[in-house]
Image (cartoon, rainbow, N blue to C red):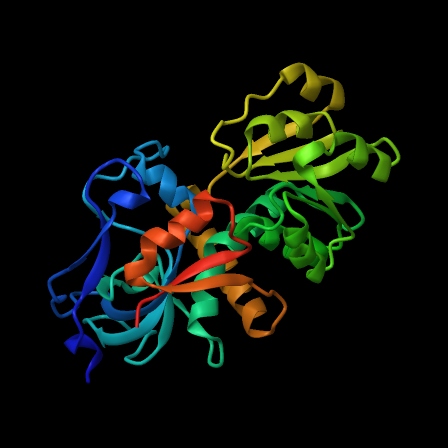
Length: 328
């Protein structure tokens, strides 16, 4: 059977609410690709916490309803439009789209996947690893510095652990359960703390009272508040998200006495405002993936019809690494 003979199923958010309101429905078959476009038969796509925020209508950038869920996927090119020069039918690519089996996109949006790289693994890493590498580079993490990673067993947290170690940092990870501790330990983090009873005193003890040079925080809320209390002089705090449900509010007096800075950023902003830099990062990460330098962790692979259950795993904080949707 030709790939395009399959139903073009998609996961759609039709109203603001929750992941339980998502619907899976058939979409029209895509038209032949136009000027500068490619047509992709998608293979796999990843779930992200930020998707849940979008479903509630609370994301910083509002998405017009209805919309196809997701924002990172892998697949193979089925057709190319006029003026497409660097991509061919059959090429494996990463594209910034979600859960739909077939879609036309601009060729400039695609990143070629090297031969031998599993497409599910390829689709699992870009959002998390690009978020991590962009932040750690903005923070100018240096060899020998201490990197404190909050939510270290989540997809973006594990990516920060993985990349921080490669950059020569001493990595302290904070997780919520002993089972998650075991996964982070596989990546080589020097210390993994259980954060349910607080972590500030332990971080200060581990750093001879200095604190962490760089703090990577996708959690926000109370975790951010405590992180500010264990930042080193001239330290950098990366605000990556707020999975706790409460955005952080920085007490500037603490930052003042520590000569510390808070850096907020998003990969979406990088792709929008500095697309060339974003693509360079993506190409670097793809080379590292092909060379087995980075090791994305996938905890679940589900069918498209199980998408609500996949998001429930994130809501219940049962995910280590990444949940993927198989679109084949």
